[in-house]
Image (cartoon, rainbow, N blue to C red):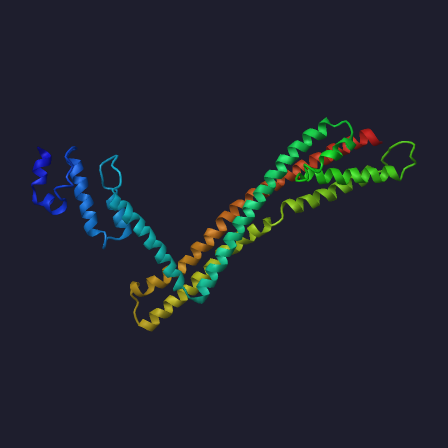
Length: 299
């Protein structure tokens, strides 16, 4: 009865065709159909944010209509077109700054992915190497497994220490395999640990550079764009916000791009610094363990 009364009103005839009024449902279904027709009429002039707000006014649990879905995609496309138009009107300096920031962002993401995979492979290989090292009865037994576990920084330390031990034994009297100087073995291990640390943290400083320089590069583009906006004020002899707003909004894109490049790079850099501390701790522990084993067996 309520549905019939509502369908006979002038509002229903004006907003909803007779075929779109649901035959089963309640008064909220009629309101949803009326709101859908109203969105069709105002879609060509309604701003995106007002359309989204209006689209959310619907009964609980109702799905988006095909019209609302199409309009949402349409306004998303318009937003992308607006960003591209703003990029084209920023000028040569603004476009150069944006290009540099995009390049920094792409390289920093590539470095982040590559270094993450490097640390993951190194950690996995280090765990396998330590398990085999503690089970081995002789240092010579480890030589056959080093090629498979070359990603581990501990392998580099083992090779350096073992090479120093072999060099000292070969220069001995030959009666007994002894190591004359543990300090030489320790120096070899320390040098190898520095080489492995440099290998692990390769390209990581670029993330710090991106995190430090990105916001300032974006700020330079913003300041340059604001200067152009003030020049347009003098040229038009008007202080209206409609004259200043387009230039300032285009200039602020550079600041947003700088932050977009800097924030992920900063987070990744701090994460890798923590990983490097853990790797250095593992190498120091292995150095002490290797020296203890050398002292027991070769002195």
